[in-house]
Image (cartoon, rainbow, N blue to C red):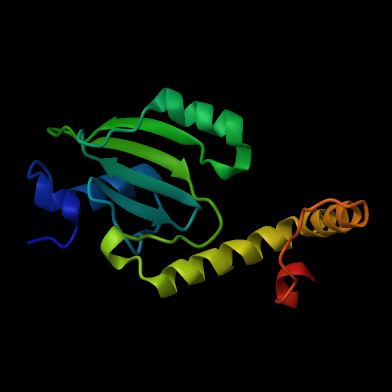
Length: 163
């Protein structure tokens, strides 16, 4: 039995078939990503590309993928449809790997500690990329309070988030 949900759900192809097909597409070193979706099998390449095999139960929409890239720019991967696996309904997608750390979770595994770690990690990332927004908010809040306004932001308790 495979530990990857996609290969438990369908029996048209096995993991080795997908690995071999991806190797032919990418002509480089490939490895499965640390977590897999219920309806997909994803490999990353040393060239910064991702190959994903997807079940028809959870299809990607090529038009929506292109629109996401157009609207969100570098926050959405460029995605290319590469057809179907031979003798299978699995679709094949190639996409650019995005920088950053993934945070896979299921409802059962989302403990308060993981929620806290995710929020703190996101806050640190946002503050490191948008420091001026935090500074501006505090300047605006301070200005409003001096004019009798009621906008109050929490005190800056973690200097690493704002410095």
